[in-house]
Image 1: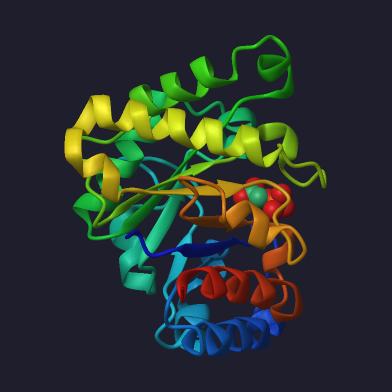
Image 2: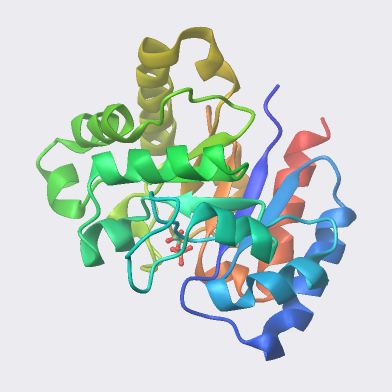
Length: 250
Ligand code: PGA
């Protein structure tokens, strides 16, 4: 049985004034021990958030693939570990689009993060044009094949299926479409890494909120959620953690 993981992605939001939300979210996470929770915050907030979060892991939203070097503005995995991060997101669609990150770079980033001891949430997802063209599963499974790190293992790796058109839009795929895509991702993973694929968590992301979390999290092969806008406050994020917990107690 895969434990559900509910991870927040604060994107470019969060100043020290928001640390009270981190603490409130961590307190709720502690009260729901049947699920894992984490918050991925801006680099500048990691150290303070790691203190404010206590036992709840705090993560980054990106990492550079190199250990060190002449990469102005970038952050290494060792720097994230030193700051107090326990995990990082890699391959978010906003970075694939805005920073032109390729599958090969995402793979290298995941490998660098793991080598430094970080957990990894690796994002994949199709655009609306790709879905409308009937290419969604082909695109997403190709991203899995292209960006899956060497030595992929459920102990440190989760995938997050995030249809680009569902991110920040209030639109979500149908439960049938979510289950179908997660099944396709799991099948691709099985082809690539065999039995270990059954243990790897596949999160859903894209407009998850307190009202739709229970039905999305109940879909076959959905092992958690990656949440953007609704993770910024305890008021919005805690109901999602609680929805995951209520599904995990049965
Ligand atoms: P959203 O973002 O929940 O605001 O749609 C999800 C994400 O991009 O991880």
